[in-house]
Length: 547
Image 1: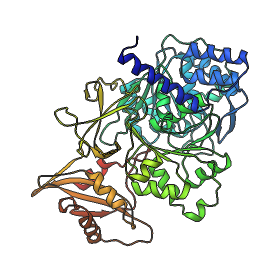
Image 2: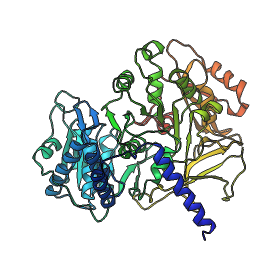
Image 3: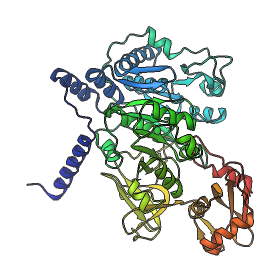
Image 4: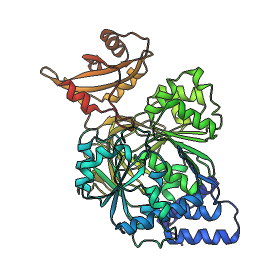
């Protein structure tokens, strides 16, 4: 007889199976192909090498990647990555070595990732917006044996790459930053000369290290092992209705956990990936229309730039096939979500999480319509609790620190540190509250709380209000030292083109809608907020400039 724990586990497995079936990824196939692809899955597990090898058996001629160089089929990606893996092995890279990848979104990023997976080598993803000293510091700390990079970054990586093997993933003689070129071999050459014989699965699957955003200091390495099952994918599919054999435009950078997540989700679905090295809002709409994409993966600032194109430009592109606009990476203003759905339909899905916990909650279009600004509810197999400073769970409506448990929380930073863990749940570093319907609202970072005159203020509430102002494009709020109040609020505001706004008008608007102690004492007008590659506002830069 099943006990209560066994029953709960069985029910969750059934939910996972039902969710995966609903995606349509399991299709009728010739028995011999089914047996061969199942053999690949059994040997390699749910990994990128397994996905491409299995797809090469079941639908070899289906397009896997579209980028500025053209198209690649699943069979071509499988052969090319085997050839690349064999050449990297011949160069001296072996199982459990780490390889750093500093690439934009293109086939080279995918092929380097899959080739490392075939070798059992770990992958360290570098932010393409990093400066040379940051790259050097990260490479010295993480110490990979090799670096795969785009030729435009040759000068940026020179110091950090010294003494390591180097390989060029993308070379464009007409591109920016590569006037002098690179002496390192190009992976295209390695692929053309390599043996594309199938490799044997490694004894240990390599880890993946994603760097934290570095908005408050030096980026940290956050490693995690590949998933042991399809349950993590099912968790996201349970809220975001991705379907098999469709087309996904990934505009979010793939070195970031959000872009990388959708690369990994696309693999079991047999999705076609459309990639561009640089984001352009109109080009992105054109790609969605041209390839009849059903999914667009972006960060909120990208979506804002698409909306800034205006109704006339947006209307030029037939994007009626778009079923999902998947968002994550930074806070999503409630008014932006509403405006996007008014323009594109009920297609916005916003994930709240972090590099460390992967995901916590997902807001569906229904959530965002009912409660603009919400982060949504936990997906399948995920637990989210809000705890006070003593570790006790708070009631709906009360603010608490956000803790999460799922199958993809990270293993601890590469320097040995970790996030706080309470009874198996990991801190996101944020604070928030649940409403009566169980929807989460994130108030901001727990270390961003501003104490002004003895009152606690979280910047997110003030920022969301300012973003709702018809003349304000975006806003950020920080606390600066004040002799009388301890801290005072300083708002940084970007005014919409053609609009005029004064400091007094901003303060009056805030005072009309929030408590007096939440009114910024100062308002600074900027042409744009400093952001990292994934759209997060660099408050450290604002704060440093405010002192």
